Length: 190
Image (cartoon, rainbow, N blue to C red):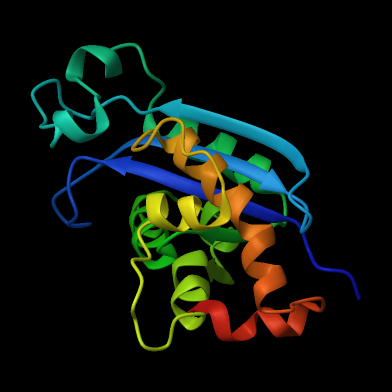
């Protein structure tokens, strides 16, 4: 059986706490196992309150002004769910991104496509760390990209990070000799 498609997702948030902080930007690149890009999309997300904090602007470059005309979170989540379309949710530190998405999806009613699309969750950070059992290397996205000769053109931009993660994924699949879907199991986050 062939490997599935992967919906590689990255978020920019106002902080690290899912209870207090909010999603500011979503980016997704859908790829085949060989890295062929099937779809890509990103969206900023309007703050729920005009004076809500945007967090470390010096890192992600997002300001309240840039979010003023952005879509509402519900609209962005609808589009994300539609575009995931059964692909395996994948992220570099999948627990972080999926926890923010799951919290946002829980606030929505009905059968939410984002909530159902978060299982299974493939983690490229976990894949990278398993190749380095003695933890001699850094596994930050920028360092993993450098190891595999992948350009990280816009760090801390959701689409830029998702594209870089999507480009690293085929290298990690090859390094682990993954050719069958069941071989992905050790790299899923529960």
